[in-house]
Length: 166
Ligand code: 4NP
Image (cartoon, rainbow, N blue to C red; front, side, top):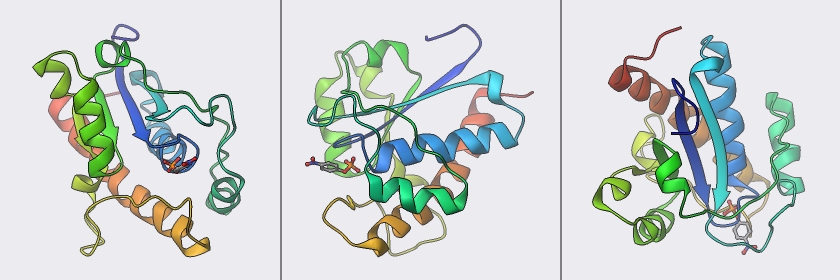
């Protein structure tokens, strides 16, 4: 538990410079718009440590800005303590989820790991959030489309399952 009374969510991708910092910003805005800012602690991290301390990838920031997201997170790696501290850990694809479950120390920690793709509703041909790093502009726009859809559903589920209210 990060802070008493707050539900904590950690978004995780491979590098923590494209998908997960975008997910963090999208989810944070939805939480804020619902007046639930004080009820959540939201962060993101990467499986790999190549970009520790870096701002999100310039391309991700450029695509996120017109939608109203300023990505200011600084990349960090997933720590073993995250499995104790966070209530929910959300991987972007099946590899992220496998890597996270391998790092979990107990079955209870393993059960905290879910996949963002399972919350996608409006894009029937997508069941995970694909890595845009080697893609063009469409890849980054797709990530944002999928995240806006999935985060809304994820937030509904969290609120429902944990009786969270203003
Ligand atoms: P992300 O994208 O996992 O969405 O942050 C990547 C960023 C960097 C690398 C791979 C994926 N990389 O290999 O450096």
